[in-house]
Amino acid sequence: MTAQPAPRLTRLLEALLGVGTDLDLRGVLQRIVDGAAELTGARRAALVITDPGDGGPAEFRTPDPDPVPETAPELRVPIHVRDEEFGELRLAGRPGAGPFTVEDEQLLRVLAAQAGVSIGNARLYETARQRERWIEGAAAVTTALLTEEGAGDALTTVAERARLLADASAGVILHPTAEGGMEIVTASTPDDPDGMVGATIAPGSPVLEQLLGGEPVFLEDSATDPRMTTHVRHRFGPSMMLPLQASGRLIGTLALPRRRGGRPYTDVERLLATQFASQAALALVLADARRGRERLAVYEDRDRIARDLHDLVVQRLFATGMMLESTQRRPGADDVRDILGRAVDELRSTVQEVRTTIFALRQPPAEPPAGLRVRVLRETASAAARLGAAPSTHFRGAVDTRVPDRVADRLLTALRDALADASARPGVSRVEVTVETPATSPEGREGVRLRVADDGEGGGDEGRGTTVTWWAPL
Image (cartoon, rainbow, N blue to C red; front, top):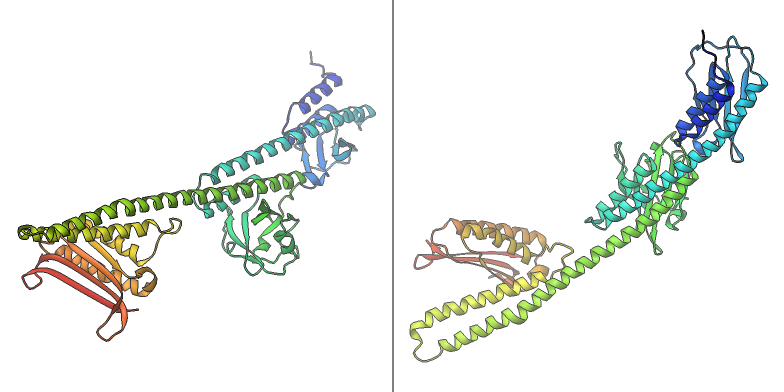
């Protein structure tokens, strides 16, 4: 006994349930095609999409068991999503069953009506998922920017996250130039970014008025749009150029181009990307303000330490030195005069070193100090391990402002050599380094003088101590 085919009403209900249980748009479209073929017994079923909002014409179809073209009549039924035509169901090829009937068309129209509802729901679900992804992405960028170091890293974070969210070929950030154009300063792309960073939109380009005015620009094809002038425009197709603007301040532009021939951006994608750019710009401003506050806090702390050193340590050392000097002058102090003299010298050296430290602490921490004073201190500090003790370092004159870099480099080389020689001599327990400017040569020329003195064996009139002197004109 052979099984009877299921009643058509039952198959219709199964098709309606199948279409209504999926929220993924592509899954819904494929279920519509499969349900239509099963419901009518058609050999081939296809759904031709004509809605440009979904990326232009597209087609979903059932596998064709017989690729040879047939002359059997077709059945076509439109699918509407709300009041707009989304596409058309096309069925053909019903071998042995004759042409499609009025009942076939009625059943297919019922399926098409449910399909329109399911497609609308899938679209809403996809839009909600898109919004969720962009909101999560904006929150992740904000968190990253408020914890990262450096503006360059922050811009890369924004460009990379936006590229992934927009399914773009590249994430690019442009900054205004002094000449009135815009320049690519950051580019995130899985492809070769060669030549992108540094590419410019020349002053006078038609698109600049909008970008510098903080307006978004949407391009259907970057390669052919006459408003684009960068030499990398030929690589890309659809593109969004979004202002990074917060509190009336234009930071730059976020560009999200897709490959040539890529899917155009939908209205929803444009809106979400514009909102993301606004939040990213605000996060960039907040991150920059946070880094400014941190630099200020460090500077204030360093300034407080410098004041404490000056007000407490230096004054106490100076007072101790005066007490020792007065003791030296007392009657009957001959037996301790040498000891007191060395103690006074040590205190003077210590006062100078503390003052040097105070000066270094008062340098702005945002930019690493590159003055000669700090470079000399670094050299003497690195030599401390070889010498067994840190050299005593003194500065006379405005060595940071008067000595040019080319002379400073030569002085540091001479200092490095002198410290290396001192570390190789036996009996060295003390090294004194002095940098002085202006220091006059015997010919009367102004320059800078380096003096490195140690108390090791093999030098001086009594066989102890070596002094190296180096001089160069300014």
